[in-house]
Image 1 (cartoon, helix red, strand yellow):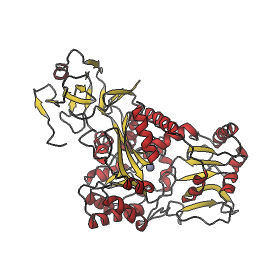
Image 2 (cartoon, helix red, strand yellow):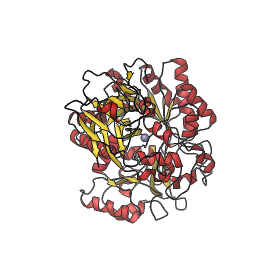
Image 3 (cartoon, protein in one colour):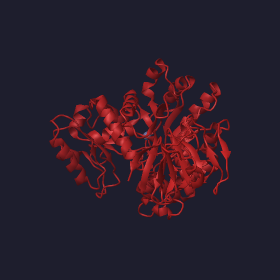
Image 4 (tube, helix red, strand yellow):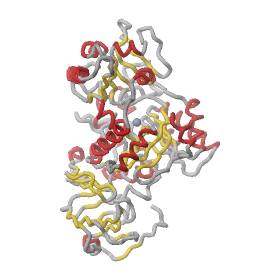
Length: 553
Ligand SMILES: [Zn+2]
């Protein structure tokens, strides 16, 4: 917090001093009282009431102190003793894209291959022959069949439409024969650089599973015929879905100019219910530079974030680039999508122009390569407080953690994976999992990691994130990486104030503090009092963004 803030204290309440912020208009429009506020690194640390004016906190203190500020026009709401936290910040997720997916694609988050192919068949029946049938959120470890989807499943269900079903991780997909034919791939086609067409080891036939850069040829053929209204509609839908779980701000981890416009148009139409820090995909950096745009442009609702690059594969799809092979696959070290030499020139251009950088790096090999790029940039073109982001930053070791700390870099590890994707962790092995989503290591080293769902790959519910981070236990009771457990208090800090730091907005949001944006969540139960294995069940009663209720149960 900045000491230059025009903040002053007066009175001595029952909890601690009331803090007041002198806004232009000092009459509150709304007072929330009789609450159990945990303010997160603010003064006072706990409070009973807040006064809100013009979308910001005007005062934070005891019931008596804050209610004394009420004028004739102030509305008052009794919170009945419920717990209030700052709104959650999901620092790495893909909302614009996910919103469109929910509008247009078959949601394959189903529990059997039969259910999935039947949903695809149904969609095909409503789709003119020859047009694409698209699915998303398929998860190979979540069906009861004990085997992944394959080409034959898709061919028999949907023979007359090209099919493209993405894994919920987004780095791999399953396609049918017609799609293969359209992209001119057969069993003899060589793998593209940084990609793979899987073959049946016995017959040599294509299995329909395509990985990383092998998806590109298919994606180029899938028409992206979304209108501006579709895109705005997608943003409206996903921002509603997310605010009802207590999220008030997101980082869009791979925004395009179309996404940026969709956020802006949704906001103008009154349909944007969260705040967005929109990272921009590296493919668009030249356009951005030509327009004179850089990180920070915008306002507290829609802001241009870092430039986003990609270094390796995915954790949930087991393609992250590791120094040691996957368990049970001695020759499989994962996939490096772009190495140091490919990342450096793009990174340098953006860094020199004042952009924050964010690079997808899951495996230890990828994190090392990304850190080399960042370290080199700071040697050659030192910038004050560049806040380099390591998107995901999953598999670390002591030396990587030291380099992250030395650079002041920000990891955005998956928050819900230990809980939700536990069954995939056996392919990493218990020793490695002790160094994955390494919140304990980061916090102990003085690093400020964020909450990050990466949705669609991970569920975005902040209460699930808290449970996953505090218990490291999956839905079946298996514990993954117990050394990395953190406390409820730490997990809340990761999900609030640390997220604001990752977007240079720590003076604007992330805590309940006089002068900051009035973003908060009212919970049905107190996370400090429930059993940690019950955190996921805490109901979200209300979510406020900028002094407005965006969700009320
Ligand atoms: Zn992502």
